Amino acid sequence: MRSKLLVSAATAATLLLAVPAAAATPNPGATPTPGAPGAGDPYYPSYGDGGYRVTHYDLRLKYQPATDQLEGTATLLATATQDLSSFDLDLALNVSEVLVNGHPAKFTVGDVHKLAVTPQQPLARGSRATVVVRYAGVPSTVSTYGFDAWLRTPDGAVIADEPEAAWWWFPSNDHPTDKATFDISVLVPDGTQVISNGVLTSQSSKLGWTRYEWRQNKPEATYLATLAIGKYDISTGTSPSGIPVLNAYSPDLGDNADSARASVERTGELVDWLAGYFGPYPFDSVGGYVPNVPTHYALETQGRVFYSPAQFAHGANPSVVVHELAHQWYGDSVSLQRWSDIWLNEGFATYAQWLWSEHEGEGTAQQLADYVYSSHPAEDAFWSVKPGDPGADNQFDAAVYDRGALAIQVLRTTIGDEAFFKLLKAWPAEHRYGNGTIAQFQALAEQLSGKQLDGVFQTWLYTPSKPVLPAAGVKAQAAPAEPRSWQQIKSAQQH
Ligand SMILES: [Zn+2]
Image 1 (tube, protein in one colour):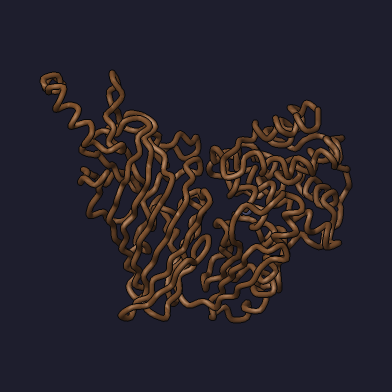
Image 2: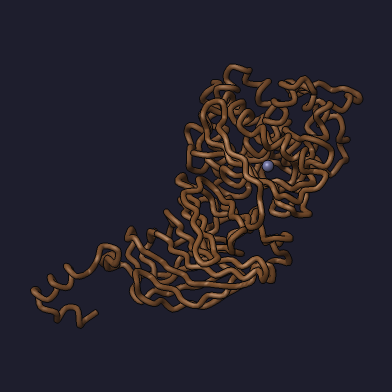
């Protein structure tokens, strides 16, 4: 520090001119410190980092389907949120080089999925930094917390999982509160295709390799970035309201090929139908893809939904498409603030299926609510899970979906249809491209309805036992019949 004082005024002025804005010196009097190890999530305390935010990811990847070898250069545009001496990225592949503002940075591979980076110069709070990470690996050999989210297919690979997915293929600040735009460019052998989020902006071949460039120009949570590499039949079109649609199907879906298409090809129709409830669709493109994978779940990867072929094993299933598209508003455009707010995602995506069931004449939302309430006796463990704070282990428990949607039906009957349907649109409008908490949702519901709703939220979201009737709107029936839509609604559970 003392040597700085000895620099003459003229030299100091020259030095200041030479320093780019991105390398601003730390704020006077502040001592740069490491970013907090984790974004502060109560369920996943080590995920993300508290010292910076990312506004953009540029991923330039090369993938070899035969060997599952992935190489990448990621360029992150970040802003320090404190005077920052070091920070973590979440990545589980091998790193060969890290640059911060063009200068080599020290890095160490830490615990499981943590890459610790120490830039040569600390980053001043509020300053922008460009972070370049060169990395490589065989993602299917990487296991964290006992599982591997990277799925190999007969002709390539797919990544779509929740909440852990990003660190198998790019370095990130891996928490939904840090949303960013993405450019994803992937080089693959000719004849192989690449599907990702957003819009395909370019495709070009040279010397046996083809590069695909995808752009997601709206903020996206890291777990909602997806990549599918392999052989696909692509279909394109537009929704009735004009949203560009791109769907992709593995040519090897066997007996499920037609039922998958008979579901996913309705994306344009269904996204417009949902816009009638939730307001304008928030992204520039929509669609889904069905790879040849043995899994049973779907995931609301932003603007391009991942579906497992098994979901179409009993015929077309537009209900699962409704569920995943509903997440584009509830989960993607408006992301949860903490993973404990998962009800804002799964409760509403399930409720959208109830609305679809009603629309199709396969059971009204009220009939589905009655069925959920009556089909679980008080001693059923189902009621021990609090949809408003289920715990990390029960984050995707059936109660989050079914009791979650039941809570929404109770809310609807409590505040009335007029306020309820206003609320369904107001929430995505108020928090568009951002985040939200259940408490904020309750406050908005109270504001729009003029009703105090503590009792409803406490009873239906935060009490680990079966609520006692009479509660508004739910009728005690001995054994209501299973609504016709029930099996399809259940098939959308797990994300
Ligand atoms: Zn879901």
